[in-house]
Each structure stands twice: as C-alpha cells, then as structure tokens.
Image (cartoon, rainbow, N blue to C red):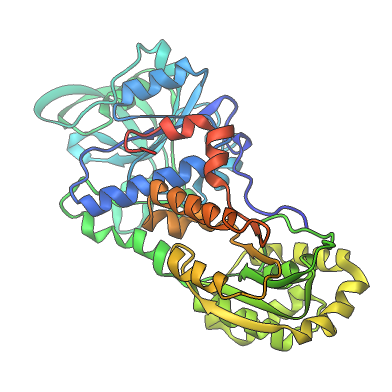
Length: 447
C-alpha cells in the first residue's frame, strides 16, 4: 500500500523556513504546563524533517534561526494545538502571504492601536535583521506615542468580534495613541516601512487553537486539549506503509492495533496458521467495534464502498471515521494482494480465533500478561503501529514516559527473542540515531 499521511516535510513552508518554538514560562497551571510541554515533544518529532529551534525569548529564537541558516521562521508559542495547520498553510504562501514580512493574529485595539498575539507568527528574518533585529514589543501602559495609521477591512474574521479584521495595510500619516499592546514594535516597523503584513485566514485559524495558559481565564480554553483526547475515532484507512509479501515463517498468534485493515493484513502477511489467535487491540471501543463488523460482514473486496456504506447508514459513528480520503489507497492495496488474498479471507481467515481487546498499550503489565498467556511456544507477532508517537498518548504521557515504556517492552521481547516478532517499536533509537538534536531542543527533556 502506498504511504499515506500528510508528509510533514519542509515543502509545506516557504523556502528556507524553519519552525521556532517560543517556550512559555508563564503558564499558571502545572497540569497545563505539562500537557503543553508534551505537545511540543510530539510536534517536534512529527515535524522532525523541518529545521527547528526553541527559546523562551523572541530575539534569541530569531537569532538562533539565523545562525542555523533560516531566512524565515514560523513561530508557535507553547500552548498552541496545531492540528494540521502547517500542512494546510502550504497553499497560501505564494498567494495570500506572498511577500509578507509578518503574518499573525493581528488585533485592532482601537484607541490603543494594534496588537500581535504571539501564539502563531510568521516572520521574514532577512527583513527582521535588516530592520535592526527588532524587539517583539511588550505590553506597556501609561505611555503616549505616535503610531502609523493603519487601514483595515470592514469585514471581521468573527462577526461578534470587530477587533479581528481580515486584512490590514499601511495608511498615510500618524496618530497619537495611548498604551502599547504586545507586538507593537514589530508591527510599527512593518507599517512605517509600508511592508505587507498578513492575517491568518479563517481556514488556518480553524486548523489550530491556543489554550491561553498564561491568562487567568485560560480554563475556558483548556477544552481544546480535552477534545484531542476524548473524541472517539476509527482510522478507516491506514496511515503507515503496508507489507504485501507473505512471510514464510508461520505464526500462532497475531496482535494488531485496530486501524483500517491492519489486523487482517498482519494476519495474512505474517502467515497466521489456521485456527490461530488474532487479537485486535485498541483503547477506543469504536475501533474494536468496527473490526468486529469487518470480520463479520466484509467480503474481501471494495473496502471503500464497504466503509462508506456503513458510515452513511450509521452517521453518528461514521462521523468519527478518520482518513476517509485514503480509502482508495486501501482498495489499491487489497487489489495488489490479488486472488490469493480473496481465497485466504474466505477460507483460512474464517478459522481464526478472533478476539477484541480493549487495552491501553501504555499499560505494559496488562499487555505483557496477555502476551505471556500465548504459551504454546510458537511465534507471536505484535504490531503497535505508531502508538508510542500518537498524539493522544503524547498529550497524556511525556516523551520520557513513552520512551521508557517502549524500552521496557523491547527488553521484555529480548528475554524471549526467539518467540516474538515485533513491529512499531524503536522510536527511541530513531530519536538517537537520526535526529539527535530533538532530545536537546527543550529544557525539560531528560533521558
């Protein structure tokens, strides 16, 4: 099967653009501080192919980026929940944001001029350097100053909030204003130089969120973390590369995560013997329900039609299906397996002892106990997919916990290495061998 996912590579950003993580030591709640640190750990690995720097200070962050050869920087402040913001931004760099020196959350503060909220900010570093390596501009009160006039759209990004224009540009003259909001210094320089400044459009605003952990009312935004955790979902198509060559070695038991065709693919490719045990495991009951439905109802052909029909007939559950756009690729994979797979599905696969196990892979005691009960001495295969670098797990469990648990699993398998065949383990070694800078990116990382 072709590899499907959003490819988290530099081509989603302008040329010579990197990511800058603006760390936040003003988050008031320790739990939210930990969750946002965990998210940065996850995002830094997700976007590992894009150059990255991190700092608590804006100027230091930009200087680090310049020292590393960046010409542009996309800054995310700790507390951001990115979704697929970076992937969705690709179409706008040569359209909406072409030639911009700044793009951000830019807010009209009326008689107190304008604000740039630093949660997500794109900056042209060459412009920034040539302008004297400007300070961001802290909020100040009881100050009177002359600021460039700014023309803005009549339209707003949210109808009930007039401070969210859809565009701004320099206007003639200056005005005397009271007070300064954060980001005033950058915006002042850009407007005085008549540079193009962009505002994130509705599509990109919806693609991310921010928890405002440094504010007293941040609790009203923390639900953005919760909705990443509590939503039930089933991956109707797989996001990983699927094998298509049947292994000669036979297995007596196969353990598989429950996304897409993973369980049946693993059983087929890993040559699960007739009457063998196939354990579909997942933390999400919806995923287990759908695998049971697959084994009871699918004819081995037309996966896209099968899934689409179910989603239409069961819209409440169907709305929780992820990666529906990749269903054609699953059909291609099934077609590539050919007639032998069809025969296997309708004969050998019907003999399996299929079980559905609701379990958190992070519960190593329970999982290892299940594996040890496979006591017939034959080969056991286990595929955990991307469980140790999955966003839900990453929010709940720090990188340290996830990688240490992964190490414990690897030790468990090595104690009986002639018995276990594994897939999906080794994220920690990948960190060390290919991307060693990631373990030094953030000050809280200790291994």
